[in-house]
Length: 208
Image (cartoon, rainbow, N blue to C red; front, side, top):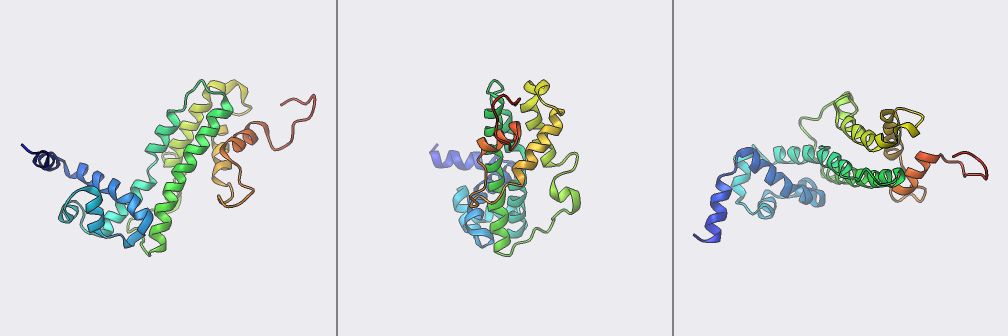
């Protein structure tokens, strides 16, 4: 049996959900580049499938774009990256790595959302209110906050606040940083340092 035949047989064995996931993962970087102007033919080439296969699992291109936006908004990858940060690193280094990981996650979200918005696409299932912001008790940011709190847990006794509150404050600092082009924007390491030690310069003999 040829390699081509083997590949086709494996593809045929995919469930509709697996096929949707495969197509979305191929489409996301293209949408970040082309926005809603990306063609299903281009997506099909990137996924290594026929264009008709897309429409076996998506009703139309708009549904595919909505699925890609939902994929970009998922927090799973960000939480996994946070959980992979070694617990034996110094607190400041853990937080610096967390800031860099979350910045990358937010950049991915922004690239997809910005590209789709600029090209005129609007999600048909856009949530409203608290759920849209992801700040609910079970929202994406809650899961990220819990992961940051777990990063801080080894040093819980060193914090003046419960680690859950400290994690929320850290995320607040991270999410309200200026635009990346703004010279006042803090790097992940500097953000961690300010969070842990405050904005005042250390003075001789002062407690940190």
